[in-house]
Amino acid sequence: MKIMYAPWRGSYIKDTNKTRDKKSRKNDCVFCQHISESNDKSNLVVRRFPNCFACLNLFPYSSGHVLVIPNEHIGELEDVSADVQSEIMHTTSLVTQALKKSLHPDGFNIGINLGNAGGGGIPAHMHVHVLPRWTADTNYMTTISDTRVLSVDLYEVYDKIKESLDELCERK
Image (cartoon, rainbow, N blue to C red):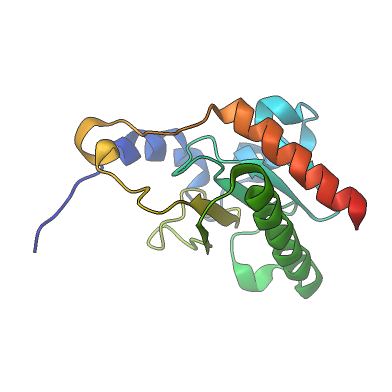
C-alpha cells in the first residue's frame, strides 16, 4: 500500500488546536466567535438563519467550499435538536442552489466530520461541509508542493454566493 502525506494539514491542526477538544469552551471556538461578531464579510459569513449560518471555509478544499454551522456550540449530531437539524439541511439545500447559480459546479460533496478520528478539525462545534466539484478538479498540488489551486479569489466567491443565496431566500 502506498502512503501519501499531506503536511499542510499539520499547520491547520496547530491553528485549531484549542477547539479540537470536544469539551472545549465556547469562547475558544472560532465558529462561536462568528456568531457573536457582526463583521460578516471579514468572517466570510454569507447568510445567517434563525438557528444556523453559512460561511465560506477559510481553508477551502475547492472554490466555494461552504460550511453550514449551527448557532449552538454542540459537537455531536445527536445532540442537535430535530428542528435545528431540519434547518441545517434546508440551509444546505439553499447553499447548493446558490452554488449552482453562482459557480456552476458539476456536482457536490456534502459531509459532516464528527470527532478527531472522523476528520473533524473543530469537533467541539459540529458543521456541514458543502464542496462544489467540477469534472477533473483533483490534482496533487496540495500534496506535493504545499499549494492549493483555487480558480477564484475567496472574496469574489463570497460576493457571488452571497448574492445568489440572498436572492433565493428573498423569493421563499
